[in-house]
Amino acid sequence: MNRRFILNRQDGKLMGIAAGLADWTGVDVVIIRWAMIAATLLTGPVTILIYILTGWLAADR
Image (cartoon, rainbow, N blue to C red; front, side, top):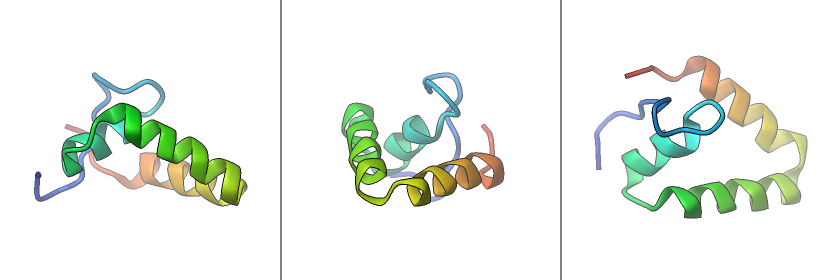
């Protein structure tokens, strides 16, 4: 587990958030993506807003 969350745009699909989160936590990226889909279905626009803010504020490699 890394100490800092960093976007992983090389392995990412959209903004590199799920790939960066997978690198940071050590969890498979597919599980992270499915969890984000489930969170979006449960909370709606809140998850989308957090996703966009994370992509805007997090550091690149």
